[in-house]
Image 1 (cartoon, rainbow, N blue to C red):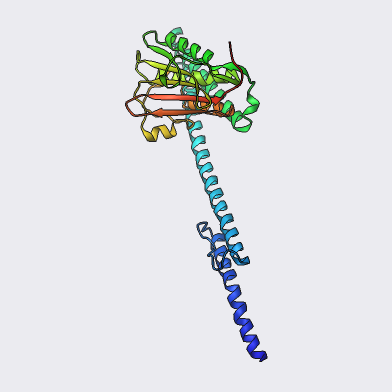
Image 2 (cartoon, rainbow, N blue to C red):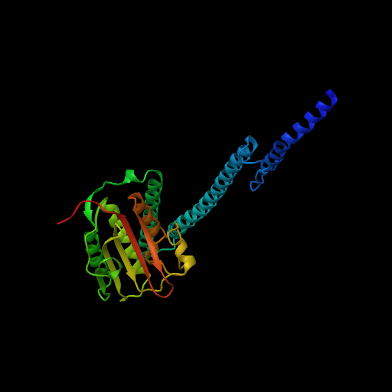
Length: 310
């Protein structure tokens, strides 16, 4: 009888421990780097072993996602550092080349020296602008709200100023001021926001439209409220963007057209990234609606404030 009880107990114990052995083997595979493995559910979820398997699988899913996010972040950081290095290297080479040419006596005339100094000044301005943009992005990443000095304001003020800025850049360009979506006249869009930051957002959107659309092509600036949000949009009839370009247009250092000449060498592909970062610091966003060959519409949306400007 003792021998029989021992055999039955051994069989029952082995059967009860079998799921734990499977869990042990799965854990060993995961420790070897296979994060896709999951613990097999060998017992009903209502049992202790079933609860353990479910909890472990949930934890493993979170770990796999965390490792994937870390790998993606590292890849973005490597790309970011490579882009920064490239953007810094180009103006630095221009400055160094000019100084080396002067040191070797390659500028005998005063006009040559003046031209070299003007080139150095342009490259230094480009470096300064790039550095300031990078510092702003870093501050927004670390503490976005700390960069804001919010006061009551209305987006109609920015829309009107943007229209004047576009007309100053290109008097032949028709600029229409409408409500959101092009329907009706411009409406009130009260917000509680940092005016200087929002002016930078709108300036980037206006500059994007002026740079990437043909001279004289029409632009529409819409302002008002829609779906409970304050809206300011800049719509153009330029070449538009393909779907894969639209997905990356807010990425840092991304340019949809790498062959396009950058006026003054100042556009490093940070304008739209800064615009979105500033908008999100206000609990808003910058969105893009575009179709290749049919233009683009960049839309700034912000929470509506109870403030009403008279």
